[in-house]
Image (cartoon, rainbow, N blue to C red; front, side, top):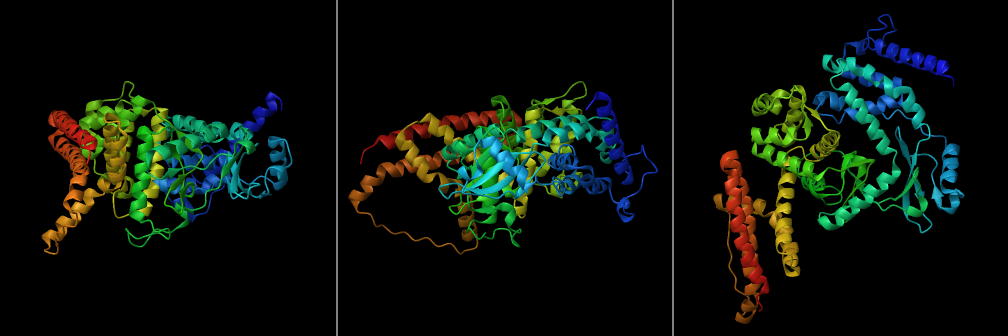
Length: 545
């Protein structure tokens, strides 16, 4: 195509997009364009945009779905509306799919797969997924990069800023729409990079083995993968979006795993990956979360991200400061990862953060939970002139997806706050393990870690029963003297371990209550006590029966 013909084609496409937007009263260039359904024109702009996007093609639909995970830019109602936009991508013809497989593998399809379904079960702008069976009988998922992706992006990527009018004056002024389009383009490129995805899944599986939290990832079949084709193990289990929310929070799934517990575990795992993992999921749906029969959680998806070490520390500090509701520490840690330019004013941002109330100020779900506060922090920072760096946007999007899934599973609790507390305690135990790197220590901590994480809840239940007069205590001595002597060292070690956990929990609450002035001193004193108890534990482990 010559440059003149390409320009004419681009101009015609731009006119087509603007006419369709004008029909939904989302553009003013063609005031006399044919109008959409009469009743729909009275709806809010974002709802009209949601109806118009499928008419504009797959690039526009994908951008709408991308914006549904940007709580720093849009309100909850806008994000939820755009989350329902269909993919808008027609599947590739079966014959084209089979030709692509032969081209990528360099051999007939039947030489690689015993069975292959040329009709995809999922299709997006960048990739589509097919079911297959490997020669050994194992079920597999085959992901293909769509060959029409470059042409679609060349045609429509530059037209996405035309949607700005649907989001108000700030977007129309280019304050954020341009940066959002750039990040969207980068996200699509990452989605189409299957080699990067394979490396991310391998890193996630490695992190899962070391975390002890039941995290896993599908295995990549290298012999049946290329840069544009990826064959993955199809882990068998229940997807999160395959079930309706339980009528009562706290019920059990068919797998036997409680809804509240599953939501908390999802949050704990994701936060652990953000803080310590090689990668963390930045974009996923309930279909990308699979609960296996042994209660392991398989995390798949298309987009994974990583954070620089300094950013991990800043975000961890920011999250803990948000739990403590310390505006000064919140703003200090948050703006450290943002570009403020000449407009950013830390004092004004602190004042705004200090006065935020999600129920009043439009936090997600109008809930005064941790996620609601976080989303308002980000939006307030944007309104004060700060702009998130690309790696921070990945964190935003991942947390928005996590919040949507965890709130759906556990509407009656604050799963993000509970998951953060568990991740924080686990991180403290990990620090102790690194300080006393002995095999005996690892065995003790491994045996008691799960019980310790649930100890606050169990103590609360016991105290509640006691207050109601329903608690009973039964003492029974069953061990002979020689058995008791043999258990002395393990008992001393357990007492010291419980004392260490108590110090960690007490220091956390005292530091939060003391505020920014005395909190660091409380933490230093707790560190000294923790070290002393660690020495006692170390000696207990060395003592022979």
